[in-house]
Amino acid sequence: MERNGIYEQTDISDKLREECGVFGIYDFDGNDIASTIYYGLFALQHRGQESCGIAVSETSGPKGKVSSYKGMGLVNEVFTHEALEGMKGDIGVGHVRYSTAGSSTRENAQPLVLNYVKGTLALAHNGNLINAPELRRELEYTGAIFQTTIDSEVIAYHIARERIHSASVEEAVTRAMKKIKGAYSLIVMSPRKLIGARDPFGFKPLCIGKRDHAYIIASESCALETVGAEFVRDVLPGEVVTITPDGGIVSDVSLCQPKVKEARCIFEYIYFARPDTHFDGMSVYGSRMLAGRFLAMDSAVEADLVVGVPESGNAAALGYSLESGIPFGTAFVKNGYVGRTFIKPKQSNRESSVRIKLNVLSEAVKGKRVIMIDDSIVRGTTCDRIVGMLKEAGATEVHVRVSSPPFLYECYFGTDIPSREQLIAYNRTIEEIRDLIGADSLDYLRVERLPELVENRPICTGCFTGQYPLDPPTEDIRGEYAE
Image 1 (spheres, rainbow, N blue to C red):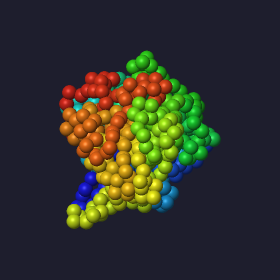
Image 2: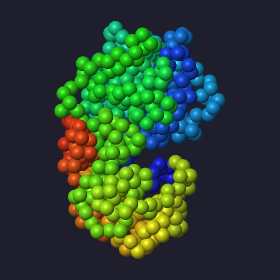
Image 3: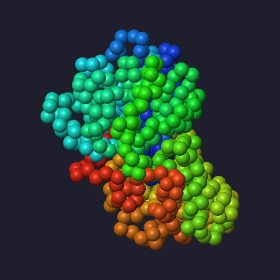
Image 4: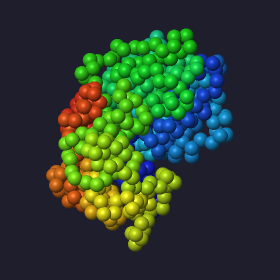
């Protein structure tokens, strides 16, 4: 993203973006938890870098009093020690956001905090609803006034409305889930309860942890480890869990569907999730290693060195090396001090945004045939530059292997895949793509291998195959409404 000559980006290449990460905690001993949420969000920072927020409440205090703070930027940019010290509460939710649609503004930052007839509600959401415009219009025609352009507010409104006719807030969440369609992992904070909910397809991850007398709900298990909590289990697709001191974890599985209908986002395993995360019983690191092994089995080539494009390509590169017997090496040095924002190089300068973030170790690649493993090629706007950098550093051959199939279709469930016309693989053969990026050879992971990456757990492959687990929206949801 460019604004007045300033580049705002979070990776070295044209990578896809996840929508967000969520984190909630209820400490039954009454300890303040704002700092714990802060560190939990810090562990989930890779899921969203545009905005973040925290909302907390004291369960022993007056109902309806919620302290919240949110802003644009990274977690350590938005929250100061003073800001966290002022947030008193033993129950709370946090959120990191990247917008795929809906404007990137402070108003759209989460958690959302609603005051309504039954008290207060704070909500953090990961995913995309495919019927958000329809639901929004329905609410607007009954007098609802929206403060944001995100579909998370649509979810919050429906929960609030259902709460009026429900015996409990968790029942209201379940009733709202019958109306919303698409991908969502939710954490809802009421004055005395912490609730987690996952859509029936299980697109996005959500798990439960425990630390002493505190329960945690988070997007990824790596966030639990960061705050010293033990992993309890994943929230099941379609499950609603309610956490209270009296009941502990209470589960409602009435909306769960047969496992064969579930559809986890395969790109969580390929790229989005942190390597040290376990998602529905499968190691993300293990999946990526396996992808590399499959590439070596199916797309072998003679070479002297296997390297990964950091950081996401490294595990697959190691897997390729172990399977092929070709040595694994480090060819790239990533500048860890480049933040979200940096001055865009002028056209007249030789610097590029890729070179600012990534350099090649010429000693490692000079005179060698190199296999370069990357997790994906989206638009292809930087892959050609990385290949060129390897050749400039003395690599005699560069063979590109991609640990995902070619992107051919849009995603409607929370992944920032551009329109088909912007995808490098759209209407091009692999040989044409190879020529565009300047590689000596190119091959992708085969679609048939995807279920094997996750031990045949049901997955969504829509962005590769055009076959979605539920019908795509009939109107544009990307331009206005998104988590």
